[in-house]
Image (cartoon, rainbow over all chains, first blue to last red; front, side, top):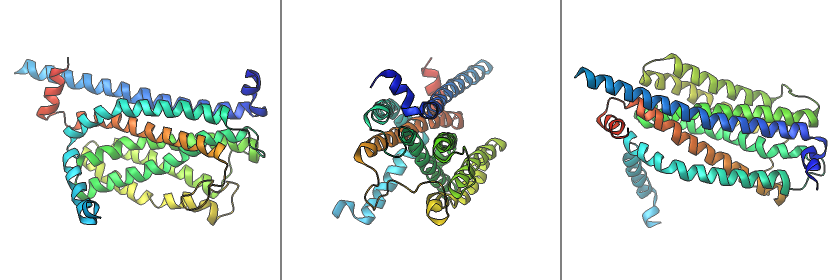
Length: 56
Length: 258
């Protein structure tokens, strides 16, 4: 099987690769978004803690 | 029986819940689990993609289009399993006031919603070449769409109430009531006439598909299951920090890690 045959997916290439691409993008979003959110939470809490420290 | 007898089992479960039900303990446990779950997910994903896209032979009726099954079915399964997990977490939080259970329910919702959306979109991309339509208003597709709206509704309700305990209580009711949709999705292909094919894989009957198709399907399903567990741990850790931010252990943790 050649690479172009593999990409063609027996004529269903558009549907097969679109489905896998969509699933892949959703996985990626689900990895990146929580990591960014986690960093933001950490930064916010640290800032709040530093401010509380100054007040004391 | 002995050690694993009914009562002993319950006692063990209660002990286990007490040990890890504390947000602090669970925060540390989840932190240790994340890299292992992530590695396992990556391994299963790569193997599953190789098996599903290359190793498995084309279907005699559907040609290569059936390969969409290897992303569609795992996401559809996880959309329902995540909902059941969310409802059970939400109910435990509501009934026994377990804060950790509330957080686990909240962290499950966005993951479940994206599994549902992926199942709907990949199903649509499979339906077009096979049925000739992107979408039909039949029982299976409609009930899965309702599942998506249930997730979205749950998240909207969580976001609209500031007090985390009240948010958890209100959204728990929605999650519990929505459970009625799960058997409807599952049995829809048997109860109503539909274009959607019935399950290829059941616990009680012989699989209706060949091993060459079954193996990639199982590997991909395991991959998405561990993906859920990985991201659940990541999400719940942030949630724990936020809700426990005024406790000594969180303050100490944030101070020590500059």
